[in-house]
Length: 227
Image 1 (cartoon, rainbow, N blue to C red):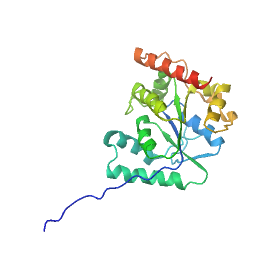
Image 2 (cartoon, helix red, strand yellow):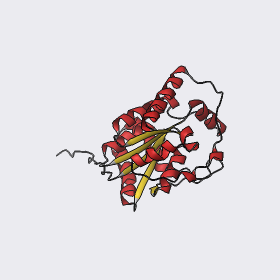
Image 3 (cartoon, rainbow, N blue to C red):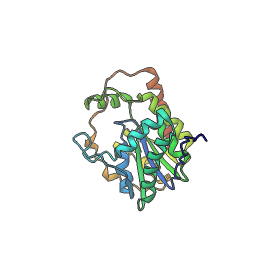
Image 4 (spheres, one colour):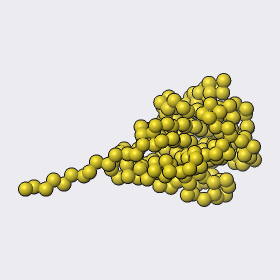
């Protein structure tokens, strides 16, 4: 009798209450995490602060690597196993637990398995983002600013409990920022923002017409949130 060599199907765990911060690198994701931390959200993190981010990165290395694999391979058994470990930790964390995402398309995989999901999407002027990344010696990222922020719009359109904010509005401490967080049930402490921490602004780095168009569209979405 022939022995069937079949792999057992592995099913993803259900995420009970997901809180996500998603944005392109150097766009203010860590700043948003600080604000949510002031509202009682605990972020999964194993990346230590450094000279570029004194307050910490609020990143989980294994989750960041999984983001890339999910985009390339989708829900393979190996990826589901990794995803389940992260979801279990989020579910088991006392109080509110959050996860930071920098490869934005990967948030859809969490959205598919979540009972309740809240997301804060953050964007920043593309010239300042690119300049800030170059300052750190990062010349390439898996997804371009345009690709990542185009996915941001799609995610915002598909996740009901979500808001879009700009780095510029947050660092300036605009009143609409606190109001936007309250729409998701978070009472953040705006005093945690250190305006002097902004290392790059008004860069003259050349960006494409498409990037300018997308940045303007993101600003329109933010304006709707801040009404």
